[in-house]
Image 1: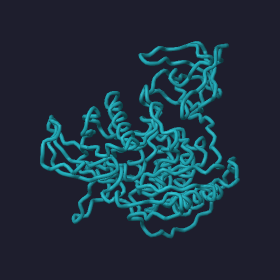
Image 2: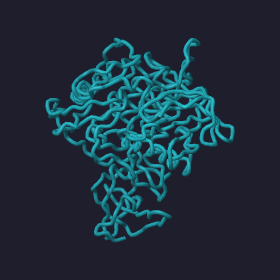
Image 3: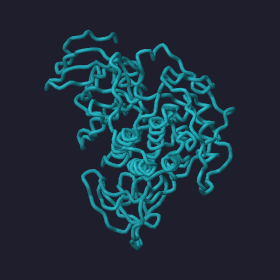
Length: 470
């Protein structure tokens, strides 16, 4: 589909103002909506690519569902879409003064701004993970600096839900979908869970604090680095953070190889990171991003099409060891090495995590978000539940058990509400005991169950009674 002429009227409700960028899903335009507001209009132009169209429709669905349920202030706001007949499009509210967080990197940023970005992003991710009554857990799978827009007021807007996984949509034959420098170990197997997004957010936070990405943009090198971090208890994280010893310990938890060893939520990670920065005597007073150079214009929507303008001309070999340059990556910063505090030995198996000789290879026309085949012998991280706080247990009556039927851990909540405190997460395939109490909703029923010494509520959509009964 050729680029649309601008200025021009589009689909009755839009006045195209300017072309912004092109990518895997199509072109993005700045436009005026029928109510006078400004929108970012993504027009799909890959009509013969069913896979990419699936990504496009997935994002449209999730943005619409978020808007209809409770628009989150730090998630791109859905305005209108058309998936009936070409030209297909999705319109979101335009973020005035938007800059990609990626454009601010290359040097350490103010700790107060880092804490603000992490807190707001964590709020958006936790809503996706646990806040939607029907579709959560929604796992973003591509949290990275270029998917975080910073508006003129310094607030975060999370974009690009195209490859997000949720109970209503998943790509069973495409494990390892994501962006290499921000992928958690379990992501290479397609075994993502909410803690996967926390791992990526921690990598973003580390890069903001140090000015340097922790993982390289090359599959084999990234896998070796993940293995090294697990083996040496994140020594490089501690070294590069220097005197920020409390901050390094928080990072070590959020970057744990086992998802079950990370914080119980992204908000918990954000809270502990702020406390650690304060304990490390870092001033959090400066919460605004650095001012952009006057000579440079930032286009914060270049990632709305998933890849930049030059993506079509770039081929990336994701598994053959060919490095992908990190645009704008700063030279390594030499910081004093610190003495690590004594920590308990990790319980994970110390066998090699990755077997490079067993990896296959394929060529991907996407230089950012890529598809990676999983090593055949890679161990699967466990999904043991994490309790966020001690609660008195309730003796369970003899009731039918339920089995968790979900791609990722189902939250056990203190009360029958998606806004309630998460006590722990029940891993897929686990069995919990019903107490006999339940609360019907319009589309599902809340069951009170006991699991792992805690009693709380789970949704019938994912807590299915054994034998198919109620």
